[in-house]
Image (cartoon, rainbow, N blue to C red; front, side, top):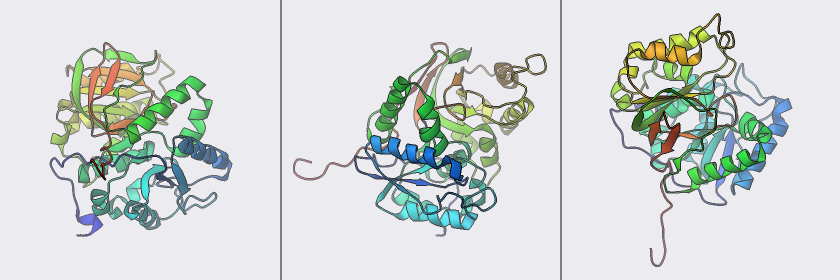
Amino acid sequence: MTAASVTATASPELLRPRALKPGDLVVVASLSGPLQAQYEPDLEQAVVVLERLGFRVRRAPLLEAGRQHWWSAATPAETAREFNALLRDPEVRAIIAHDGGSSALGYLDLIDVEAIVADPKPILGYSDISLLHLVLFARTGLVGFHADVATPGLGGHWQSAPAARRAELERLYSTLLTGGEAIGALPTTPSWECWRPGRAEGRLIGGLLNRVVLAQATRYALPLERFDGAVLFWEEMGCQAAHVWSYLQVLRHSGILDRISGMVVGVPCAIDGLDSPDASPTLPEMVLDVLGDRDIPVLGNVEFGHAGPNLPMPVGTRVALDAQQRTLSLLEPAVRPLEVTGPGA
């Protein structure tokens, strides 16, 4: 069976990666955008963060400052070849994207999904990496780690955050990647807002809003029934306010909004028009306008995505949402516990 021959199934079992342990190898890779030379110090700082979490860290060969092919570090075939090599390498226990970008669409059909099924590994990132999470969840059931990328995330936003927040995030990421138990409630901040009250439980599905729309336009789209009872999370950046409204309308027309049980919206980033209330509706107004009479809870302004240090959102795992109480809880682990071997196992 070729890499391109595996398509989405109606409801594959949830595929959890093996939990990481101290000393495991984490590889930083250019899964989308290239590394610009001026961000080399940020990447080096990201490596420090990963090492502080207890992991060995290596860069993939394509992650070389100044290497560029159009808006990527390499051609889609070259990127897929390196990605597949990492997926097949038993020493590599996790892969974190160096940054987002605009390249994942070029190699979705070249990914060795059989290697993922044989040895599932955490793949971390957001933005363009949302496409990988959604498509691999559709094709294999793989839990995707919508979490900070290396260079602008661990090496950028994390460094400008207060020390207490950095320590909180390090504990959270370490528990998520190495623990076999559910995390429970994610740490709340005063920015979280209840846009529509209510409670919901369901599988966490989402990512960058425009990438959710793009993923659903491919042959690897999640079947609609996979959204039944799901908690949809999304964020958006770098567009017009009207574009956000339009993307949400696409989700409405596709039937997704009729199936979900709740919604979590990230902090908006660089969306033109939202800072001009006389000329544009607010983000809550747009969301509630598109939802209409769909009475589902909506929690807004949650810290994941482009606006700053990311709370991890493990795609495919079950969560509990209480918008009025402003809580979002992870109800099950994102990784499977390490197998115990030897005497007494």
